[in-house]
Length: 197
Image (cartoon, rainbow, N blue to C red; front, side, top):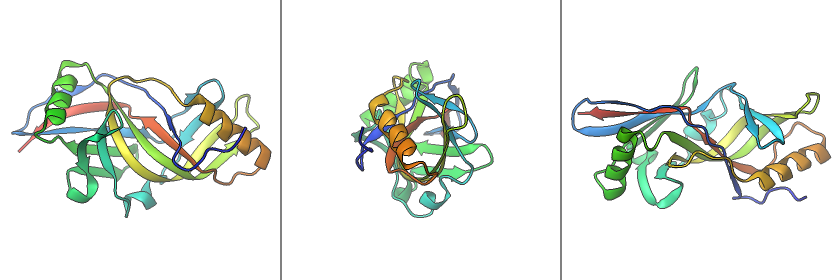
């Protein structure tokens, strides 16, 4: 197996119920794209967790966008435009997206309000990670990333297992706790829809 090529992405998906609340005219989706310390199974290959501080460097300067279903044609927000706000707090990666008055924005708002869509994932390249092979299943702790995007997703599902397997095999061969170049998409735990004036 070969190590992942730059730009290859895996998707991690989890979903929980979505809450909606009204507060003015502007519609804002808010929630968490990642929860620190939460253990996720990647296929049946390994466990994965995200350490506090993982996003700090990237949030200081990366140009990050919000999409619907990872579709770059369906832009919902951008941090440099102020329509996407991202921050690390004690819990994880906090996300707020001011939905645009576009077909995609209105559709996403309606789907979340109806309960049809309840998940978010994020795309990143791991630039700092540690592997623990002393456990029954290896555990990967991600410590630093280049964050590319967050997405509101319609189908929470796992994908990209072959890329995950290559990451695991590469880590075993290197027998180090250094970083491996791999892009990841992780699921958020919850969304809520808010109207803001």
